[in-house]
Amino acid sequence: MLTVIMECRDQESELAQTLSVLVSAAVEGLVSDVVVLDHGSRDGSSRVADAAGCRFYGHWDIKDILRGARGEWLLLVEPGARLQTGWIDEVMEYITLNKQPARFAPARNYRRPFFKRIGRAVPPLEYGMLLPKRQAIALAKSGMDLETLARGQKVSKLASEMIPAWVAAAVR
Image (cartoon, rainbow, N blue to C red; front, side, top):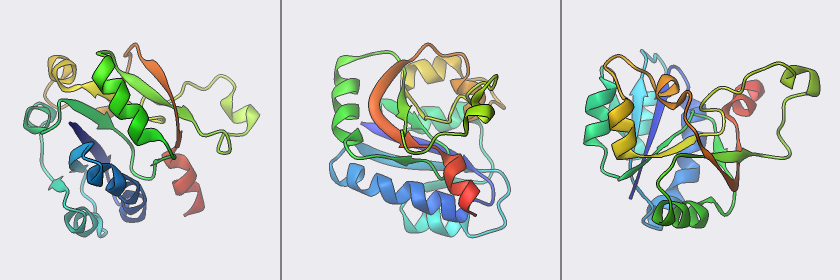
């Protein structure tokens, strides 16, 4: 039903945090596969991905990755991002009833300080991106990264919250 795709570079611990949240979704039958696209990591990212049963690519083209995705919907997410309770049921319902992309809501307890939010554009994947595979394939161009693919999409907002990846990176 859903393929999760992440890009990483030397983000072993962040990758592990995000993958641990996806286990229950795989058990529920929502997540059919997880793809990790690497940018030359020198840490244990590949071992973490392998241990979790992910497909790990060191050299890739986004068009090939999207065509090979098992799910009819894609969840683009940054390593370190953590989905909060209730997201599985909401996403199952959303992908059954909708055709347009969606993002998760910001976690209320993890917001950037006020002055760091002013005048700052939210990065396209900060709160993930849920989109139909067919739409992603139509938008994809060779050499494109996930952030570029997600940029400029008109999205719905899901009620389920996501703790953004920058929270995990700040703890490092």
